[in-house]
Length: 217
Image (cartoon, rainbow, N blue to C red; front, side):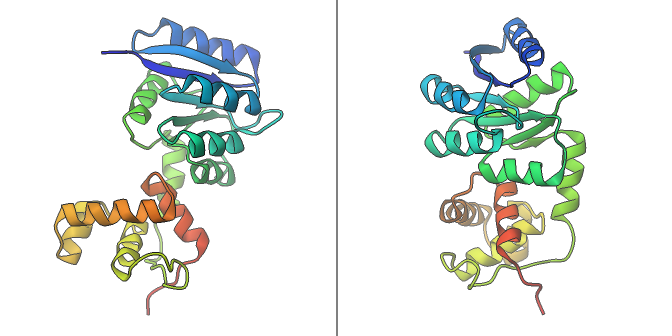
């Protein structure tokens, strides 16, 4: 099995070098690039086309959120895994909106970082323990539904399914509730993601909630 091609982006020299040493020592990954600012990160990422990028957020020239957005827009197959000290909700949601597939806090153990790299490369979305709790708290709450005025590009069925996604339901649960096959729901979800130009469920939920949702009567 070929090692995963990984890039490191961080403006703190010591921390970046520590990550580089860790990745170099791991058999499952290959370090293919580094950058100390967001603008260089975009240039190197588009040239090297890594499988996964470990991305800091607070950086000179171009912050990590904007760098992530530019990279994902040009090369959506690249998985961005944020690794930062910033744990406020605004930073987490901004990174996800930009297209990040994972969010870890600095201080994460070596095994957690490597496991997260593998997960992100496989198309999964992963959050560190503290971040996951924040996400679950955000996704829980009043049952909401998107309206035709909010998402005119979606069909009525797609808006219903998006509402169920916002409720935290998985495809199988949505299928049971709506009396559909899992394959049909999966196809609807793919169409929703394409129309909303999002890569995963967390991104879709944040977009839906921030775009405006109404509580059902």
